[in-house]
Image (cartoon, rainbow, N blue to C red; front, top):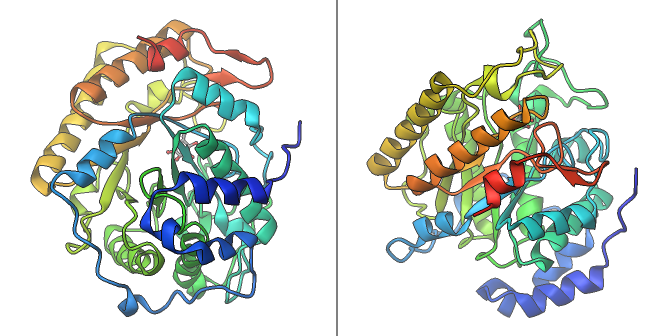
Amino acid sequence: MRTPPSIDRRTFSTWLLAGSAGPLAACDPGGLKGMGGDAAAVPEANEAESAPPVPAVKPGETLAMAKSLGRGINFGNALEAPRENAWGVPISPELFDVARDIGVQTIRLPVRWSNHALAKAPYTIDPAFFERVDFAVEQTLQRKMKLVLNMHHYRQLDGQATDGRKDKSFHLDKDEFAVEPALLHERFKAMWAQIAERYKSLPRETVLFQIYNEPNYALTPSIWNELAADTLAVIRRSNPERFLVVPSINWLPSLAKLQLPEADPRLIVDVHNYQTIAFTHQQLQWMDPVPPAMPFDRKVQDKILEELDVMAEWVKAHRRPIWIGEFGVSIGTDPKERAAYARFNRDAMESRGFSWAYWDLAGEFAVYDPKARRFYPGMRDALFGA
Ligand code: GLC
């Protein structure tokens, strides 16, 4: 597998200064210091009270931001693997070219920070890993796409049995390490303090942070709502104006239990739609049992629409935007059924005013095969064609 070139810091800094219109970048060149991976300067995470008030938005501004995410794609199986390249998708310039060329407006970048930070305070994130994320950020922004940078697969925080395992007790992925359980939430916030500080100068028109992917299992609604509020306060200390993405709890089922800080109008909610799992996850060997081949029939279509209706109701009731940050179908599915699924979802989401990001570009649900250097049949058109 090819090793991508390491980041050229000069290029990135130049881009930051030239390309960003945000007030932070304009008046805070010192913010770039953090880009150098200054390990000594790990910001404090446990002073949520000191977060500044979040500036008000103009009417419709957050909704406009959510809409501007448009058609997106997930850079899955890359930086959210326990180690880079462990799940077969390289962070290569070629893949960013592919995304830009097919018309992707937003890249969602899943990142497993938890495997690249110290186990104990101050939970310093490995500077070399930060540089790999810098590289992906730079590649995205250079090509004029928007970016949603997240935290993904903190297995121990979820207390989750990894997908497909028979026993539902908690275990870590291969090559992952555990920390003292009592430190989990503090570590989560401390990692966010560092991420937020490092990227605070990036333009808020194009870069959003998503505080976590799919809280579930041990992250029950009450636990998650509290952790999310604390984490948002930590991020707001360095990024008062940035639009932040907060995930729904337990996919759709606990959306109604999600509580967001009233005083923060700069939040977008991410809900994923894999209806139905039997259809979207067919033939995946890590599923237990492995779902057999099935067509994209009326029943599946109805389930998709049902989920979208629940989301649309929530938006109306809460006056906050929802972004569909994941939906997708496995590459083992019949190509015609895959393309039909992709097109159906796209049309259904867009006709209801939702922006979206397909899962994923080059992994197990891919649009593009990086080894063969070709698109999977029908997928490019179904998602991004006329
Ligand atoms: C999940 C995850 C992603 C996973 C995908 C397919 O919801 O966010 O990491 O690979 O969906 O199961």
